[in-house]
Length: 234
Image (cartoon, one colour):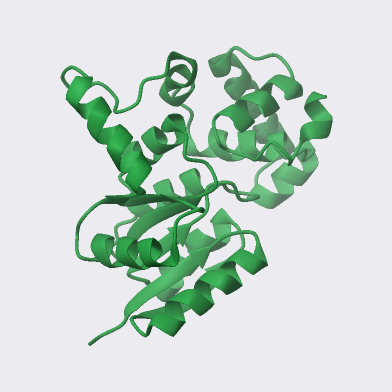
């Protein structure tokens, strides 16, 4: 039986090592590579062409949501299946992931057997969510009218609906991580003036007026973890 090829993307080495050991010991998977951030994940997908990507949400430089968006939008090679493995199981996060077209979402408290089952299921063309999330989704689907979002908490839906470009989301994350405009320009290969232009555009679209506001937004939207820049907003 041909093994399912997998790429792991998580900024914690102990998590990646544990996942690799778990998957390889099962005998059904081949881990092709590991990414420590979203940018590396996008690059390795192009290079290694895995069948499935297991992706964390909160990663430096490029978060899992944006990385998954780019991976799923690629044309050549055909995109892999993407399953999000996150410490966050809130409805708002799940809603964003589902809207991207990712095939699965598991909370990190899931058992090893659930993870193995999830990867096999999405590889076969099915969707898979943690049992607790799946139940909530079914309950919401039964109650919501028409094509309304699966989860529609008023406090989060406004954030999800804001239309930021891919570059604006990238700049937002780096600003929220505490990077200076010069550093952002160097990381993204653009001018400082262009960084400032994107930053101003993000602030206008979100109706925010300072870095602390951008950081709070990034945390609430799952773009960065609350521990990344707690010093900015305290």
